[in-house]
Image (cartoon, rainbow, N blue to C red):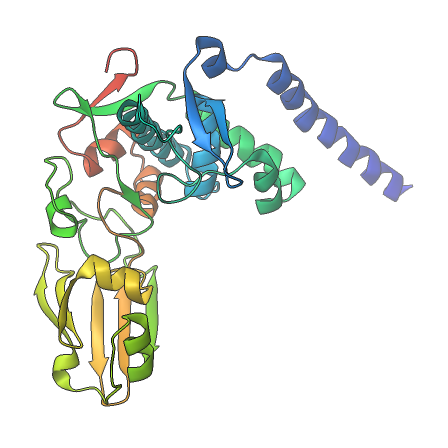
Length: 313
């Protein structure tokens, strides 16, 4: 008898929680599609599909930020992603590429609803999809602008133990809204990773012609650092690289690194995860937990920008 009551209770919970949400989801029209704001997305199979911008952003936020994060952090991510998409749409208008964005980190990561179901279990899918959709619709049409232009709303996973980076210290040009600001993270050592490379490993990863030799002290040295304290120029096997180039070539999590060099190995410890420019996603979540709104989070990471709607930007 007790088992029967448990079954009935579970069934009632499913009906009360899931059924109304499902009905409303299919009853409400898609606002983005209704207003005709669309974006061309090159799918993994190479086909280009036209999606409603707001629908597309649900897939971006689901791919780019953990669904467990606070609502205000998800809203900040949605606005940053929308701003990036709007800028790409402007730049790609009339181009011969035939699409605005793809589904990879080359533009913005994006996943389909089928992939969301694979990523989460079926029950979590309904809960997380609804949560992310609420963050997107709750910021509908909002974008970040500076000096009348969409900003480069760069973001990364974790800034780590140092402030965020200035754009000019990582790439070739500066942006007044991409400066050194506090990480905003409660746990600065959330991402600490260790890597070990032998001489043979390093020669192969850098496509160095060789012959392979034991390491000397000059074979891996940080020559200069950014204003935030990360590696800016690194000399490896007699050649100078930017910190970003070495991070990519060696598959490092970040350019905040500590070195331990012997004749037969180079041990690298990194702190943080990503290029460290713009919004820290974990920092955004920690700020949201501390009571900050999405607007306050965005102003923290993109100081001096304005929040406008697409039809006014």
